[in-house]
Image (cartoon, rainbow, N blue to C red; front, side):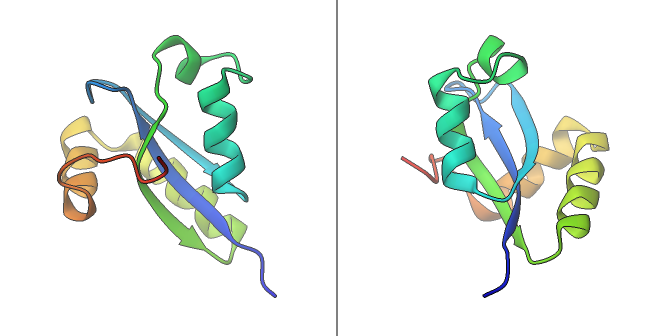
Length: 93
């Protein structure tokens, strides 16, 4: 069984703030963000809604993608999210 890695984007409830991250356990990581266990950006801006993710089998690819997305403009990130989740529904309710 191969490992899975995820590059993901969280948003706040009004979709005004985005956070890009990477993890090897998406469900656990989103739960950590939502619980406030991790102080920092997502806690400060209430980014708890999973609006986009990509799955990888190579951790280096997942990290490279995270770095790439962090450099993108907000408009480009919005376009990416909208390509898969136009309604900005929480993908992990």
